[in-house]
Image (cartoon, rainbow, N blue to C red; front, side):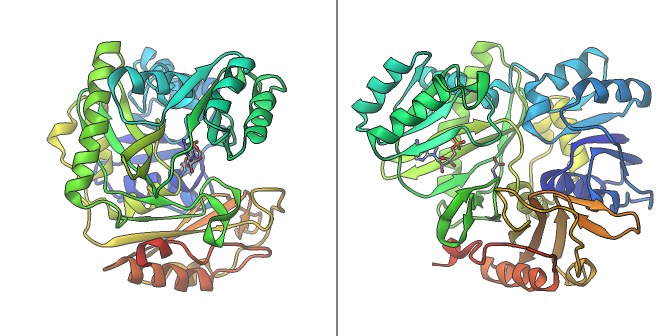
Length: 430
Ligand code: AMP
Ligand code: GLY
C-alpha cells in the first residue's frame, strides 16, 4: 500500500515510524513531515518522502492526492479534520483515516461536545454554553468564579482559562466574547465548574460502530517541573498510569464510550478515527473535560511504542468498519516520552540550532527519538525548527526503568537553549 501521512510533529513521526514497520507498506509520503520522518525507511528500505505541503492546506493536499492516488491517507492534526479533509478525499474516492467534518465537531466545537455529553449522559462537569457575555457572567458567579472558561472553537490549544475568582472568570469571558481574543472561536463559550483530581488521557479507536480503548496515559502540559509555568502542547507523557486498574479502565471506558456510541448512532454521526477524551478522576468518579478527535501529542509517542499490532492493518480496518477483527494488543512494558523543547517555548524561541548527539541517543537499546520541530540543514545536519523539538521515548520493564532510560538518552542530546522537564512520569513513582 502507498500511504500519505498528514502532519509534521512528534505524533506524525510516531505514526510514520509505526506504519513504516508494516510489511504491507510500499511507499510513504508525509506532508510536511520533518527531519526525523524523512530519515525513516519502509520495510523494503525505501525512504519516506516529505512533501512541501502544509498540514492545513487541504486544497493542496487534495490536488496532490488526485494525481498520486495514495491507497490510504492518515491525518494527524485537528485542523485539517475540522476543515473537512476527510469529506473532500472521500468525495474523490480516496481512502482516508480520520473523522469527517461532522464527527470532528467533538473537537472543533466544545459547545457541541458539552451538549452531546449532557444529552447522552456521559459523565462531565456541570456546565453551561453561552452565546452572550452577560449570561456567561451570571453562570460564572453562580460557580463563585471557580470555573474553566472555554472558547467554543479551535484556538491553538489556548482557548481554555482556568479561574479561581470571579474577576478572573469575568475577564476571560470578556476577552473571548467581546475582545474576540480567539476570533470566531469565541462566539460561544463553555463554562465548566472547576474539577479536581488527577487528569489522564484516554484514547479509543473507533470504526463508526465499535470502539477499542487504549491503555491509560498522562501528559504533562505545563512547561516547568512540578506542573509550574505556562501551558504547552505537552512536555512529556507516559503509559500506563497507576490511576486506573485494568478493571477500572474498562469500567470507565464503558461509562464514556457506550453512551457516546449510542449518541453517535442517534445523531447520524459516523466517527472513524481516534476519540481522545481528557478525563479528570474526581472523588465522585471520572468526568470528561473535553473530547479531542485525533491522537494526542506526545501520547501517541508512548502508545505506538507499546502497540504490537500492524498499525497499517488496524487503520485500514478502521476505515473499512472492520475494527472488531483486530483486537489491539499492547506490550506489558511501560513507555516514557520526554519532550526536548527550544529555549523560551511556549513563548518566543530561536530556530535553526544545530542538534548534536541524536545518533548516540538512538543507539541506546529501547530508545526511539521522535522528531517534532526539526528540519534538515543544507549540509544534512538536523536543526531545530519549532517549539517542541524532540520526543525522546524509551520502553522499560517498569515506568522507573523507562524513565531512567529516557533521561539517559536526553543526556546524550544537546542544542543551544534546550529545555525539558526533569520530572516526566514522576507522578507514577510517587
Ligand atoms: P481542555 O482543552 O478542555 O482539555 O482544557 C485544557 C486544560 O485545562 C485541561 O487539560 C485541564 O488541565 C484544564 N481543565 C479543563 N477543564 C477543566 C475543569 N472543568 N476543571 C479543572 N480543570 C480543567
Ligand atoms: N497532549 C495534548 C494534546 O494532544 O492535545
